[in-house]
Length: 294
Image 1 (cartoon, rainbow, N blue to C red):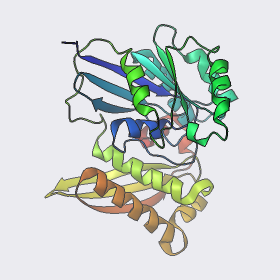
Image 2 (cartoon, rainbow, N blue to C red):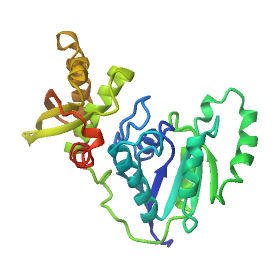
Image 3 (tube, helix red, strand yellow):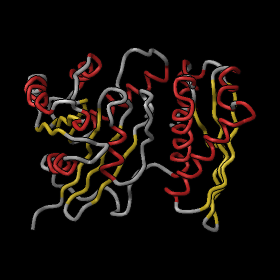
């Protein structure tokens, strides 16, 4: 009988390359929020996938970038560096269509002492599949990758092969979590993330980078949850944008977030959402810590 395998795998990459989509695909549950905005993910999230003879503990990280210099961005970059120091393997995600300067910024951070599997995402978006092999030959020179696997996190194409490639580099070790565990994060944390996702999806570029969601009340009983959330913004003008004319934008955000909560939590949710102003919070490290969900 083969030994049980279990290990930590960091999923890293530049902003908006598909890390959260991949994590959700791998574990079969909506853990990480997804939008077209770069750096939607702000937190290190564990996603657990348990199978008969192996357990994957994926660590989803914020997108690494150096353009923004706020306290919030420094905290997110620290999370990536911390994750790389703790894991058994690294899954680096790039866009199969192009390698950018932001991708290259991550190369010096890739550990030499741990296997790095390169996942080339969005192959379904390639206009010409003949471009894939030259791209693989090019990226192969950047790092001694343990494996290179083209995938589509969106459609699931070749994700099973990627999972098997990762499993080949997991250590023999007992499971870290019960078989029915999918994350180390609480429902309270996920509730805040679902509200934040709907904000980004609803308001797009109108909503500023310095926006946070904090759960002030989370009560559970009789198969129901009563949740009160605060959306923190940097300026009064941002508050008006989030609320919208006649409260229409805020109502739409709350309604969409509530539906996600009910589907994920498996029960009725009563959600109240307010908007409050806290100027300069994203540039204050203490405030960024307290309002970023950590």
